[in-house]
Amino acid sequence: MAGAPERGGVLLLHGVRANRLAMIARMRFLNEAGYSVAAIDFRAHGESTGDKITFGQEESADAAAALSYMREKLPGRKIAVIGQSLGGAAALLGQGPITADAFVLESVYPDIGRAIDDRLTAPFGPLGHLVTPALLVVGRTMTGLDPAFLRPIDRIEKLRAPVFVISGVRDPNTHIDEARELFARAPEPKAFWAVEGVGHEDIYFRTNAEYRERIQGFFGKHL
Image 1 (cartoon, rainbow, N blue to C red):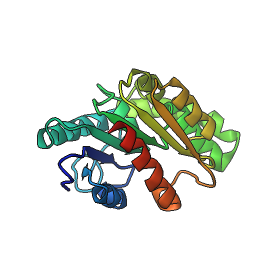
Image 2 (tube, rainbow, N blue to C red):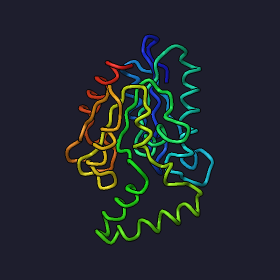
Image 3 (spheres, rainbow, N blue to C red):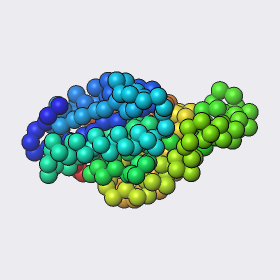
């Protein structure tokens, strides 16, 4: 969706087991604000081919290709990325971080070990801690992915663009202290929003007007 010629662009990257349609509401309000916008289906999601979800490692190539396409279409303009959960990890991992001019990272896990552990302890309590190491071994055997590379918290240090980290205070999948740790490792300029009363869900639909205000304020400074 083309925007005003004096405005930059925004690439929107969806969360796990979602698709580009999950980003339509964000696309609309950003386009109404004058930004050119685009969204993709990651591999193994939506209308894209593929049979394996890699938690951001291989999806990072999809994010990089989409950003390259937007730069071809918007030569000379700044382009930001909004990455939700998997989308934010994809913007940081692989050969990344991708070379966007600003980043909004929503509900992004710091490392795959804690991501799995959080998802197990939420329903099973302390027993979940006992299962996490085995799942990491099984996951590496089945997918070939090395947990050492699935660490967005290490990659965020390499950003050379402003970043806005957003996470729900009640998120059971990425605890708010983990989001704060991710934020702490990011270089300046940066901003943080701990969203009260929100879990691991679509923050835009839970906050709506406040989300729009904060995102446009961030992009107004940096895009």
